[in-house]
Length: 462
Image (cartoon, rainbow, N blue to C red; front, side, top):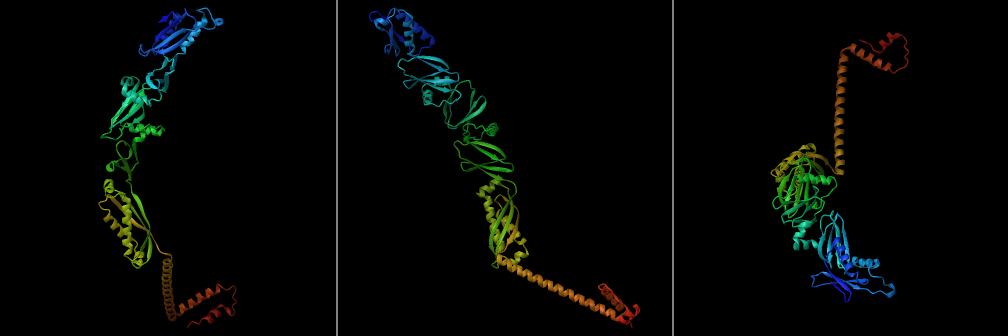
């Protein structure tokens, strides 16, 4: 629309103009104003045009010395520069998406490429998002999901989970995120191949067996799946079982291996139990004997859990129960006997405690293999007294043995004397034997009168 009286020109311009439309619009404005002097562009909203904007080109009369003939290049460049300032160009990269806002309100989503918008009053703003960060975490997400579901389906992967559902999100075939029940989220559609699986955990809350190795592999590689904290993971070593509790109730026994369960809507616990033979020591028990002697006894026992469910249903801690019963059995064995009885027969404690334990653990899922006393420790003063007693006993035994040997030696001498008395030849041989022993200790012997005289004079044989 042009007016020759006020030498002005006006056009209705849509809100969004692409690059081609912008060039055509500028050329039309230039042709319409070439008959006028240098113009000034002005923009105003038009109610009659349904929200479109009116561009007005009015003559701008410079000073007489600065006027140029109409149609010269300076006028055209001045005109184009004024038009371009009214348009906002936005460039969105291929790995980005953008949200366009008009006066702070969400207007639309911009795909990758170059966009031009007529914005003479500078009321448009843009917020860009990298699609590599797939989750669209923005205040406008809920608005788009509720008010424009078609836009949500075109631009996003829409995830809406029920209270009994868990979501698994895959990127390029790799599990990257676990979504909690009641999740409502938008994920950008982009070059990343994305897949979503839904798992119903209302009745079966164990993780699928094919997912457990994948989860273990990610942990070993140091990669943590987002949301994996919602899993209750149980590692059961070899020769062990795990008691699995759901909401405080005993649910099942887990064999050796790795197991995983969803925590959502449930309280999960586990307790591992060793099925191998175990050793329990009852050390430092101060007990009084029947004759009021204080002893410290150390006991050891070998046991194993034969029925896990029975043992842990009857007792909260079966090992503590066994330890307490071993203490009671030991006190019963020591407190009813004197010190001498215990020192003479140490196995009596083993027998009494074994009989007591087998009777007490029957029906509790425990099996006691053996019970034995490791050592009995006496007080310091009692050790001294016992040492003196032992010493006196040994001295008395030594005296008895010495007297017995002296009596035997005297009896042997008496028998020898009787033999020599009746047999002079034997007496003569004994004398010669004695003489031989004497001469062995003498260095030099002088004999007078001959050897026969010496022998005859020493001993006269009748």
